[in-house]
Length: 393
Image 1 (cartoon, rainbow, N blue to C red):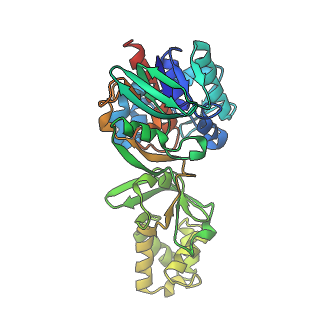
Image 2 (cartoon, helix red, strand yellow; image 1 turned 135 degrees about the vertical axis):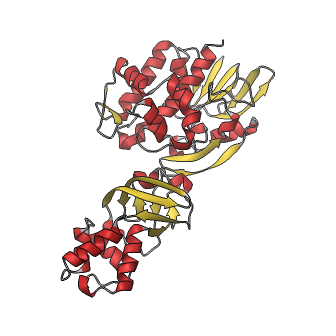
């Protein structure tokens, strides 16, 4: 018997790749509970970028994920859903959604196809322990049932959104079999700033193509101010690298050393707040910046002291933001943790430690940016695991 633990995108992909020759164990009353919540229920399930560009967006994990993406790429997933009655469309930013904008249609299309192939589904079933004896795995469930399998695919998710069943318990199963686990931390998470937050009035304000510096690491992306702090792709995509108490630096206005003096010379009688507005900074943001620097917003540009001008330029070019808190695993979109990649064969998804054990999706310790990359790679790694087994039984 071939057993799949977890009925998310990776588990459903594995079931489809195995052509119905598997039993899938799901702890919830239905599959894809977390998938149903993705994209605020609209399900951005992949990104339409060409494979090379797609992998480039995967950053340091690109080489490791390459075999899985080439085994089943974004166009293959789009076509599979199309053939299963779930057409889709891609936006200008590359994000791909079901035409209906309903995550349930994605889940149902995958589930219906898996059922049609003959996959067996066991719901409300939690694996409490598993071990390997000789050539077989023995699994104990919370229902008291004991199951035996020759091959096992572990894709029980990560530790984010535990209310969906993705509570990190799959990590314990892998650890008990001898795998090294990277302890999970929030990923795709917003951050809050120290209170009182001088930027609370900027909530809802978005800035395009901002560069972030965190130690030696730098990245570009769109930034969003929230009531509590900062979010948007720039923060979400790099949150797994951040820690409470760290200071990040943002290039709010990279050319401030040239732009600001020029604007001040051009409009010497305007207030410094007005000058900042003419530098394309929203009034709420300009007010917050000047408040932090103790510069009265009504200060006339020609009267701004040299030290104040220098401080303002420095802040705009390398604005410091100290992280008060990082969104918790309870609400973060994903986590960064799980089985370390060096213990899994990227070409097959098989464990290098336990023959016959395969791992896929968020059970693995990689973190990808927003935009459909995580769901696609959960599907791709699950598919590769299933195909590897199918080709060798």
